[in-house]
Length: 134
Image (tube, rainbow, N blue to C red; front, side, top):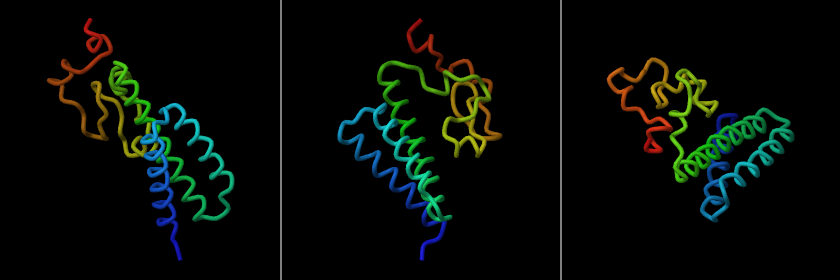
């Protein structure tokens, strides 16, 4: 008999495996994101038990986070500044799970809760202008 925790773990693992296979096969980050959003919507709409909802929600959370990571990797490969450097201080992390744990942009990087970037490091943070060499 599975538990809700097992179902959630299975959902997370399934999303991780599927997205890894899609990326390894050369699918673009944008297409992976679109396809995973469609599949997550299907899973969420069909879930009719606590275990089914746990699986679907974990799949959706993992898929969103992994697709966002792939998009960020792509943007950085094209010369974009890291995502945290593009956010105002205090902006919650894009991953809902990390945001719920207190992760947010601070000084151009993501930090959790009470872990703030020391002032001495704020002057060397990456900004879009600095990254572009301006």
